[in-house]
Image 1 (cartoon, rainbow, N blue to C red):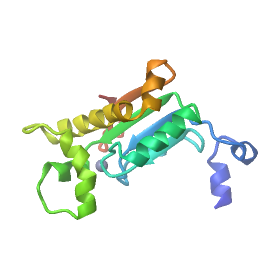
Image 2 (cartoon, protein in one colour):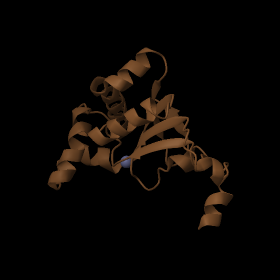
Image 3 (tube, protein in one colour):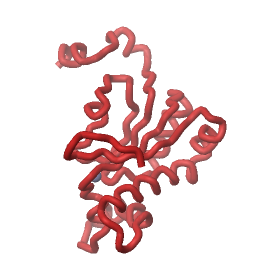
Length: 166
Ligand SMILES: [Zn+2]
């Protein structure tokens, strides 16, 4: 295992041991087909990643992103939704969910517009999550205002592996 780690890392362990310097934070879905390190061919220390089903801006995600910006000085946050997202699809339906899953889909539902397609809902949910970051965090809003942080929104297409800006 340790050889696998070192063989696939651009930085020697002696450097990794000193700290991390990610160039981007990614808020994305927990979907097993959506692995940011693979999608962006990134190595350990490159990406600061927060994942949960539906890539919503939940409290701990925002707090983690605040740490990424304030402490690690990450200059970029990408909120990345993805095609055929099951969490967004569940939010669009009224099937019974567990209490915790209801809580998870609540912010997704807040982003939806009746009559839109699943792809449109996926984009709307990602944009909504990105807006929540600066609405709910003074740290992130100030960083955007002073130019030290850019927040972008994208969609990962599972079928062809492409990432499109939204
Ligand atoms: Zn998903």
